[in-house]
Image 1 (tube, rainbow, N blue to C red):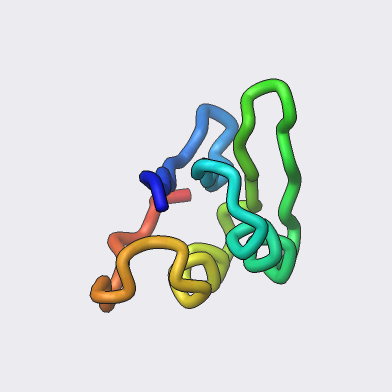
Image 2 (cartoon, rainbow, N blue to C red):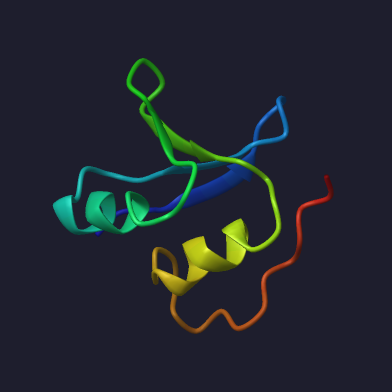
Length: 73
């Protein structure tokens, strides 16, 4: 598996990008508010309560991370 990148974009949304993986795509689709951006090849999510935690719970990044640093709204 390659690198998974989780960021906050200029619009304040959480973005996630990763090399193609059917397993990760299935996990992303379980998170409410997901949106695929085909031109830029990333997924976005609203930066609302619990979304970052849901992304982390899906084990999309290292499972050893216990508590994420919250994005400011």
